[in-house]
Image 1 (cartoon, rainbow, N blue to C red):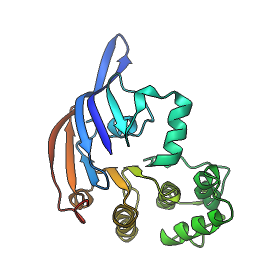
Image 2: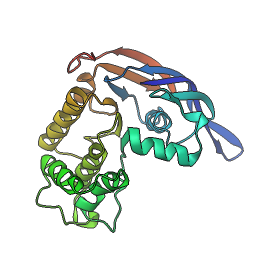
Image 3: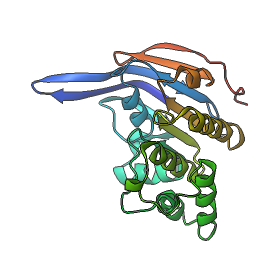
Image 4: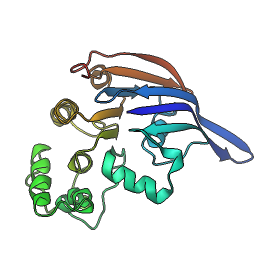
Length: 231
């Protein structure tokens, strides 16, 4: 599903350059669940953004579901992501002028899902425990509630690949367990490939594979306990 080769990301920092990701090679199988772990500043979020096509690497390449991302324009990458990719940002990225329901509806409306869209959006918000908050705006929701809206939105278009940056980072234990169950269900039943950045070692160990970064380099790639082996 995903193949990264020599993936490098360098930023200008004053008169010097800062290498955040340094020559990462990584292959992720279709229908697998992979957790990316490592200390803060190790390049985890940068890796996720490059694999999802949200940013371009300084060097190296990414092939996502058979499509070399480097061959696409910005508009083509955006269109590709709308069809194939879900992304949960650590900072939510909800639209402040839209209600929780309307935020979840955005990817469905972009796909032209019509009348079924509202029912699906309502069901997803019910499943993350926000059935009574459909008409609330992000400013009226707690951080954990905003995280759950972001998760529901990411699930909405039934993506082939879901990238999630700390999907349980702002949630209490009970809600976090619900979200983990939803992620596992998406992986198992919808056959969605999941790539998760997390500091939650319990969540990481539930993945099929655990990839560890340090100093922008891949330093460990091992099997996790898994929630079912990819078929």
